[in-house]
Image (cartoon, rainbow, N blue to C red; front, side, top):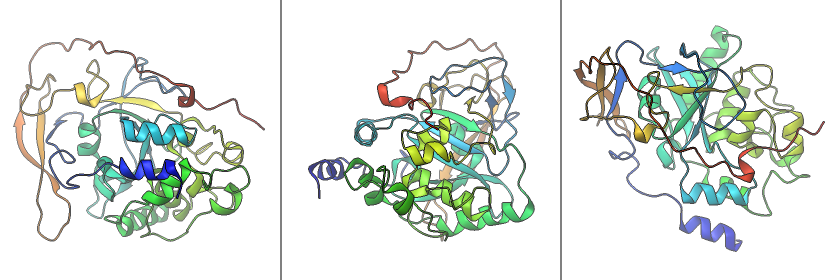
Length: 323
């Protein structure tokens, strides 16, 4: 095992995977529970490009997330990649509601399916959406749900992900074509980008012959470009998904989740918001986000929030496409 891998194992995020830090209470706007999207751009700088529009989510949308800490920043730098550092996939949950399927939920070592309205409003970082260009067929929708449900609760593929920071990385120029191939079965251990690509392959939305889930990182899904030559030629989402659009819960509020008001702070929206608090549920190993109250909000205009510009490093944007 290389020194870099040992170092990363020693700094892996740990803690209660079902505690309040991972499942905090959150406000969900009553009138616009899915928030707003801004004009599309292949740019990881979180700039609200007006005009804003209501987000109308659908199964198959891909969420790109960025809330870096020292552990993930170090790992991504070693792997020659950068922001965004996480992603999820919108799926239809068994009860018919929309949810987010992701591996590594809340910096834990688990795959989870959580209600979409709670997840996006509780997320502490920046969030972009790549909407699916064409709605799913009923069979594609069903298979996406099947994959997510089968993988929900499975452990995160930590070692496989850490290998990206070593000479054994499947992103190597000669190894991607062979070792990055899909598993083609739900219910396994995956890391974030891998689980999304695997699910999309399982649903028949992308081609298993050219997709390389085990060699894909979230940045590949954001830009449709990659420092990896194979993935750069076969971008998984290109053609089937619209460009990234920055997301916020209300126009004019802070784009970073950590700077938005959370219960019990006053809610700034005029339309009011539900207080959603994850509660323990018998028979489940993760709490269930539950509406526990409602606040009317402050009847005043919402002033834009000034935020320090996000630092964009050398590896936060891929190189020029090589074809």
